[in-house]
Length: 398
Ligand SMILES: Cc1cc2nc3c(=O)[nH]c(=O)nc-3n(C[C@H](O)[C@H](O)[C@H](O)COP(=O)(O)OP(=O)(O)OC[C@H]3O[C@@H](n4cnc5c(N)ncnc54)[C@H](O)[C@@H]3O)c2cc1C
Image (cartoon, rainbow, N blue to C red; front, side):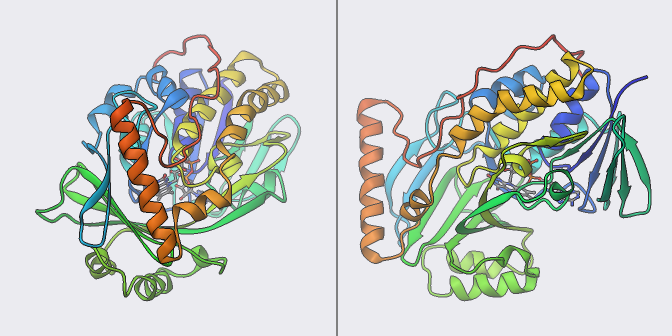
């Protein structure tokens, strides 16, 4: 009889794992707390090992076809003047805009559509309790249903609640950075460039093109107050309005769209755990190892799903498989988590002098990039290819 995995979280890591496990003969059930697939968020990059995995999963073409067409990053002043320009890279490590980029919601949809026919997706559902019987695990769901499985995988993102049922006491290093991702109406002046403005007070506003006829906006700020991500949407909107009230450039336009805009509001944090599995429970993606705001989360989530499925396929002993999964992924995650809070502060200057220095640094980086034709990692992104991707026997394409 085929083995059964119950996966919690239907964003990137969860559906990617369902895809890989099905290809290896598993039965899969995915529960997602939201009532439907979530399409908020903006462009995410797929680089390094994540890109290799996308190729191995057979979704690279779909990702490319779903690209937003972003042509690069322009750092702008209040008046919109671009003081530093970084054209999109033509390989997967070059530049702030990767060659393979897609809206997070679109990648989630690609993965969902490739798994929906053989995966039991349950939206508006979540795990309330887990009982590990040794030879199987039982999940009590919020709806009152019970599900028996060989393995429970928690892929619920940084602020996962079920994580504690598998490994209690995860350390969340809050970086003090809040980001609101918004989908707002497109205006005729919106072009194919990602435009990013930083003003004093650590306030950032960015606009990015999408391929769905809207524009993806981002408002970011540093705060010593913790827990804003747990507030109601109305309270978060009030905070954003107050925080960005005096900000120039396109901030007024974004604030005007706030009431109707689909929004994802997050407190950026790094998740730190000594281990990612216990018994028949395992953590995957941001729930296990969120690394911060530099766009490595999706590549890590895809890679983790691939490695976890490959190791589970290689042996019928889940303990050995989960140990190997941790050993393979740990160096990759350690590298991704090297970004320190000081870098976040430098990226989000609070004083006018800080803004001046920030602009000078980006101008120099853009100039050097242009002159030498080499990558200058202006946004201090950790490397995305720090893992030698293990090779597993080819699964049957799902
Ligand atoms: C709506 C949304 C928008 C995002 N936008 C961006 C972005 O613009 N840029 C960026 O770099 N990263 C963004 N991210 C984060 C990015 O998706 C991840 O860093 C990365 O892709 C790894 O994904 P993940 O699947 O591990 O976790 P996540 O993408 O965080 O997904 C976790 C999923 O689990 C679900 N969930 C949470 N709790 C429960 C529960 N108790 N029971 C069941 N399901 C639960 C969530 O609704 C979500 O669908 C976004 C995440 C989300 C959820």
